[in-house]
Length: 211
Ligand SMILES: CC(C)(COP(=O)(O)OP(=O)(O)OC[C@H]1O[C@@H](n2cnc3c(N)ncnc32)[C@H](O)[C@@H]1OP(=O)(O)O)[C@@H](O)C(=O)NCCC(=O)NCCS
Image (cartoon, rainbow, N blue to C red; front, side, top):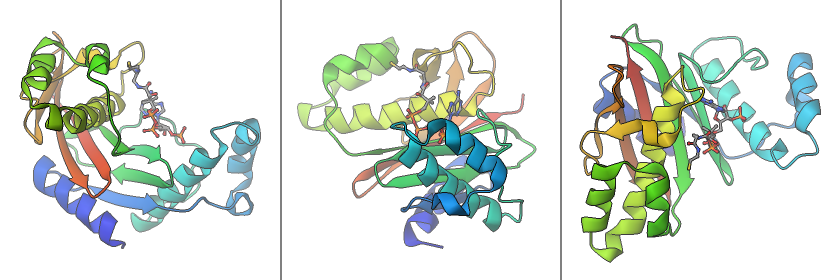
């Protein structure tokens, strides 16, 4: 297991209190290593901008499926997914897994550190989250915006009923907290999340808890 996998897995296990497995890919899966069913899927996007990230994602997913002793053919996987989630950014993909009976959906999101403009806040943060962001010193605002972006994306992915929902539907109860509870508006679905910065990466994981 790579050092990065260990760090992410330890962070998620410690903060979310549910056993999780993690696989990181830093190179694409060569198309020749795809199964016949995967090649059929890849054929639809081979010449698109998504091709490289999709192959990077398949490398992470296959690494994870091998690690947990499951069939590494990813062709039948659909997202959102109760047990698995995937995120790619640049030359990296992260896949996470949990089959805890307390969990009804799993999410992960990764971003490379970059400048995020304050004006983006209104597109994905609700009022109390924006209040937190705009009370921060200028020097901390961009990285916290990026972290909350990954939190929201991971929550969205962990919601297996996310069709038709947007990032503003998901609310971190205490946005300054690196890990904690989150919810969807007036829905009584309970989520928890955890986020971390590791060098130039910001990573969040989220779980939708069984009611
Ligand atoms: C679909 C979405 C979650 C992808 O996130 P992203 O940051 O662009 O890309 P990531 O690399 O982190 O994640 C991509 C992976 O998420 C997974 N995914 C795709 N749609 C998904 C969904 N509806 N739910 C859960 N996971 C999903 C897939 O595995 C995908 O990788 P693949 O195509 O290689 O299989 C994102 O585009 C989205 O729709 N976000 C929320 C909607 C929203 O409010 N957007 C506007 C905000 S202002």
